[in-house]
Length: 312
Image (tube, rainbow, N blue to C red; front, side, top):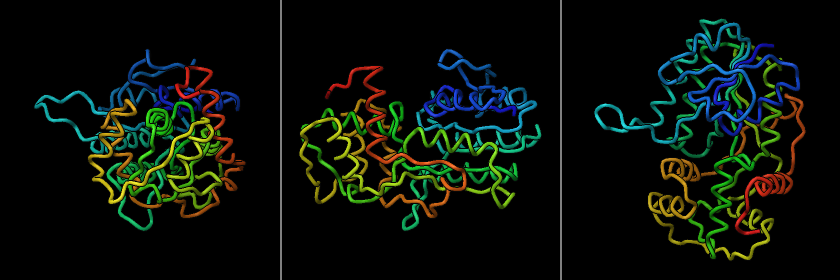
C-alpha cells in the first residue's frame, strides 16, 4: 500500500514510519523542513497550511496520515498579529482534505484528542474536533482516533509532567487534579494507527474512535505514579481555592522550560474528565493495550537511554 505520513518529523510520525515499513508498505513522508526529519523515508517537502507541495505529495497515495498540529506560535504575519493556532489547523486540514480528495486517496487517518462529554471543549480540543470533521467529510472511508495523554519519551505532554515533577520540591496541584483520564502508551497509539490503515470498520462513511489505555486515573494519581516510578519523594499540595488557569499555566510552563503557547492550551483542556465515550477501539483494531505503569516505565527508560533524567 502506498502511504503518506504528514508530520513525519514529529513524535508520533517518526515512530509510525518503521512500524508501517515492517508491514511492507511503500512510504512517503511530508515535512516543511527535511533537516528536522530523523527517520529514513523518501520525503516530499511542503506546507499544509499554505497547500504548497500537497498535490505532488499525495500523487498515487492510497492512505494518508494527517499528524499535523499547530499549537506553537508561528512568526508574526505581515501585519505583525499572531496567527491563532486553531485558524492554522483549520486551513491545513481544509487544504489537505481538498488535495487528498482530488488525488483519489482512499482513507485519511487522523490522530486528535478526546472530547469531554460533561463540559465544553477547550480551544485546543475544539480545534482537533474541527479538523476531524473536515477530514472525515472530505474522504468518506477515513478514520479519526482520539487520544488523551500519550505516554512516551518524546511526548510533549508527558515530558511536561516529568519536568514539573523533577523541578518542584512540592507538587502544588490546582483544581484540575481530581479530573480523570485514561493515558495511553505510545506503543499502543502507533499500533492502533498502523492497524487503522487497512481496517474494515462499519460504517463506510468515516468515523471517529476513542482510544485509551486500560487504567482510569485522576491527574493527581497520574502525577503520583510518575513521581513514584522516578523514585522521588515529592509531597502533593492541593491548591485551594484554585488559582486562575492563565496564571498557573504560565508558572508551570516557566518551571518546565516549555512554551506557554503549548502549555496554556493543554492545561485549558484539564477542566473536566477526559474519558472515552466507547471502549471498543482496541478490539475493533486488534490491539492489546499496555497498563499505565508499564507505559511510564518504558517511556522513562527510553528517555534515560537518550538523555539524563535529572531526578534519577
